[in-house]
Image (cartoon, rainbow, N blue to C red; front, side):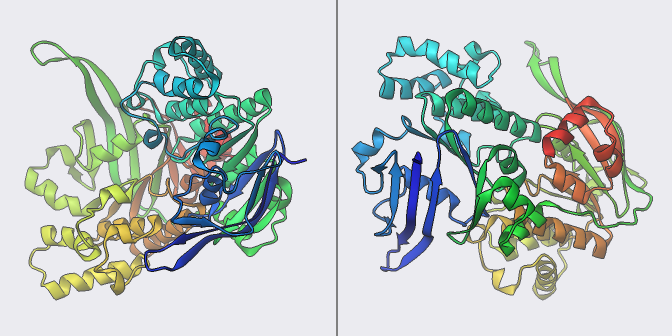
Length: 528
């Protein structure tokens, strides 16, 4: 007998005008004790809504289950339970790890209190007796210096540590099923590997079943026994990991797998366009009474590199390695020591006006387009803002023509001019951010994690777009990412950073096929 049986699950959302939008249609699957079931698909495929429905976490009555929908947990029907009945199941028998721990954890409460809350609620612990169990759970999830960390607030922990706290909360009551909804999104590749290993280890120790939801096929392949592929609210393919990944049948499954195997376009790189020599960026940690820095952090420590005309330098490393700070230094957003040469110009020696004029030649695309795009400006205003600064003499008609040309180049059109950022998907917002940078016709584009939060198929589209733009315009790129597959697809040369230092530099072939540094070897192994 299966632990969980989902049969003919259909979910729709009722609109204010009386219409119904079906988001999940006739989904059926089972889950055995101790099994890991992977659910993959792009945003909007229905995978998260399906998981939320199992625990009654949908916004009822706006959401509605189909009349034939059935969710059997150990033979007990969950569909239609009231809130009080669901409280006996949630966090106790079936636990849920949400995608973004920073949003799920209460910023006002310490970690100890948040984990203890579920112990008090479901297992009858007092606040005093819960302390030892919280410490045990944190140690079980591999958090170093757990006694100190349990007294910290969420913002004082790294992304990987926060995710471990969420896992500790989820396993506090020894659940039979753990639902992990995109638990590694936006984490470094090495931290992703740690979380996967942790979940696998906990599954064995606690004999838990896991529903692992992700758009990262590499991670699903590592952890899952079986996989469901969802598209437009339906299951289009299911089977064992080996069967689905090595002998996919549905065209969409093949598209997902092909999108994950990105290839680098051939680029004829020229002479160095940008050179950095002994680049150093420090941030003060402590100051004395007189304001003098007594302790500092070297975010970038004597790093040297070059970017060729028409070529791409990939910069990889985990969070805190200094890779983003390198990009910030180049565009003048942080102070630095050392030298950065752009062509024949030493950026350190340029006066304010010369530096401002050079800004249009060096543009940056940030990680999260939703936060980097002004929500109060429409697309025409966002893309055209740089033209107002650098080309104030352009007429409105000339400015619009340039905007339309670059929107067309990035796969958008005239119908998008009057729309606002919230009206677009993540991939479309990233295209807007790229268009905003390209409209000034730069020579160097710094891409800071441009695909980290996107579905694998959208990642492939953005990378293909960037490759085409580079070929057509002869642009130089600095591609900053922790996604080794994306870096491999985009780069000619790669610089590996750790703790502010460049630990290895080489061609794509040298880094991926013959890595020398142990840290580089660790990154490559985690990505495969």
